[in-house]
Length: 175
Image 1 (cartoon, rainbow, N blue to C red):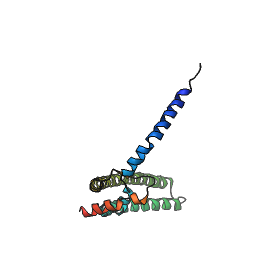
Image 2 (image 1 turned 120 degrees about the vertical axis):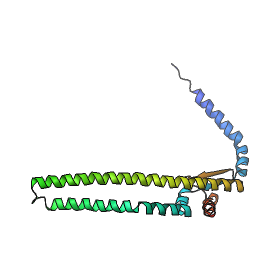
Image 3 (image 1 turned 30 degrees about the vertical axis):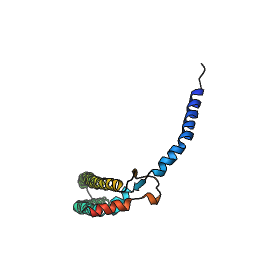
Image 4 (image 1 turned 30 degrees about the horizontal axis):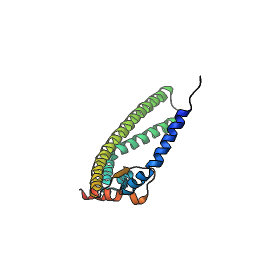
């Protein structure tokens, strides 16, 4: 059975011809193209609304975080006490301490998991609201300044294309 290798070569030739013939058209189009870039991570770090949301979330969850830290210290104290007194405890006392430690450890892990889930949910809600407002501001900037294309989160961008400061200012002014 003979395999025909000319088909991939023909496709390559057609693609190369298309690239060569369309290069002048693409060069003209790119000369008229106005492109911008927005760093969403910087918006989350520095936009006043994002900072305020982060502070509100921190305040909302600080008591639960302190309770978890207290529970962790209690667990550590139980473990240290059990290790220190292991030789002097009866078998029943040792089992009771191990059971108490296991129950407290399960309770701690459950509360810690619930805390993380609730915190992530709350952060995602806040981030979604900020992104929604940022996207609205980006659209207004794009229409007002006649941008053709605005990227968010690229690997590398020339700093002259970065309009993040304009978006942060628009978010601050929108209060």
